[in-house]
Image (cartoon, rainbow, N blue to C red; front, side, top):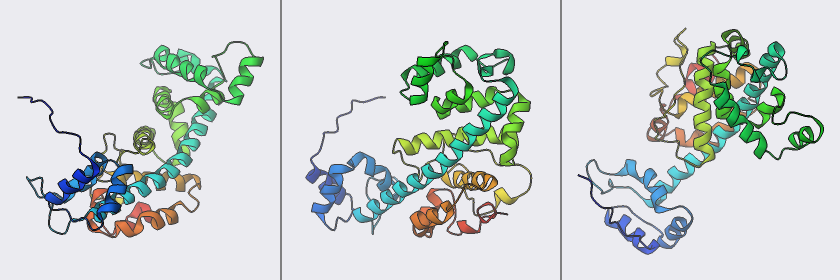
Length: 299
């Protein structure tokens, strides 16, 4: 039976006392209150939750506020480094889709249902795209509106720069199979795997962009692992539903296009120390030996 929500709003001092009453050590209460004033108690509770005793609101012995903050900062750094890689891959995906589709069907071919799968709801997708185009303040869009007729009917290479990543993923899935195969080819994977990967990256991108927790989260949209070979399924990938699978996908996609630069080194610099802890590594679906995974090593 549902009951009314009756928990009161607490002052920062009361929040500290509540944590202490549940067994969390708070070494510097003033510093902890400053933290709570800029990172809400509710947000931090997701990072404190794994330290709770099973079946209780109390925390396990040795749990400290500082340890929870360290975990929060680890997740924050992880989101930053994931966003950097997703940006590189997203730009490459936009380029590949634009090039292959426009080369086959011309600058306005994306507006013709004959060039897309029969199931694709072009009218719905086009309405969403046109809304994004009308709201855009990009200089190239303003130039097109001032010089050419037909707006918001614009060439694909303009549309793909404005449309959301989610709309782009939807469009890729609606492309005919031969186009999808050509788009996925430079990435070295089957087009169905590619579709799964970019859909998962779109989801993780949104998590990171909205400051949502990535650590200790089962992903709602997980990337499909290639079936050929055993490299993807090595023991270091302990839980494919968590963020380490996305780390491996990003590594593989960037390596295929030679666009990873110093990203692997920066990931190690940002989160490598944290991932040496089995507890933290488990939270992203890896083991503390994650660097030995065949895909990370390039095999």
